[in-house]
Image (cartoon, rainbow, N blue to C red):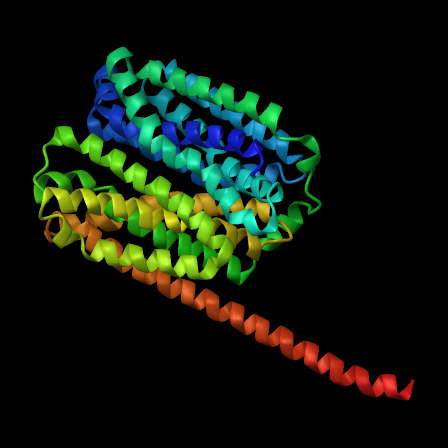
Length: 404
């Protein structure tokens, strides 16, 4: 694996840290700015909205630029957004800064995934994507807990300054480690990138992402009340358990990349089936502290096994112009975040119990399997049509050759 993947992982680590750390800093931000916790929660939504808006727009705007240059420019925008967050004078300015911080997120992962696959051997493409995403999962293991502690001891503004420093380190790594000759400007113009999004297989792959990761966030968004109300953990233990989720996600990410290089489709179906089963078993697993800890770890593993296969599948379906489609998949991840949290909250507010969001997530995951099955059927149909056309062409060519 090329060392240049380390540069992508450093950028992913910074992005993952700034995305998730706000959840742990909400009380500190609310107290400092004199706003309520729900109002501070809008800062999480502002970042997610920036990802959804920025992923397709920035990918389209940079469609003809060298990818190395695009990655450095996106990380510079990330540094600017986090620095502005650190010096935001009030809630409104912080909302705008968080939106700005989210803009480069999707495009960075989208373009980064394309760069990662071009630098790896054909039989290691999924593993190369998983190594880039390793930075994102490691952010949940180390980046977010450390950044949260820093915010609690030195103030939340210090956290965003530290994240800005990580972004500067990522810029230096990208400039030093990614060779210019491996990241030329794409041949496809913006029209070609947009044409890729008109493909039904691309939309089916994006739909699988929304359903599969929506299932994860339906449960993960309400993991704290599950652990405290159902499993009996003290609130002080939740941070450690969330680190276990990060460990499971890291293991699942690496496992998914390795397995997908052997069979992408089988890895995707296996991951979704495992996620469905684990979420369906949550009401049983949340009855004891030990089984609950195992459930949280397995949840991260099963969900992130599908990360690399889904990213690679979208890129393959839009192989002529993969950057925009790959970035759109990152927007789909964040739509899954918002939609999954809404579905889980609906189950919880309906009075079905603290583990009901996980059951709702199991239904979403099962729906994702259904979408993946439709995508598989469409692919098989396309293969049969192409094979039939080749057979007809050969039959027509034989009489013409005989005449000649």
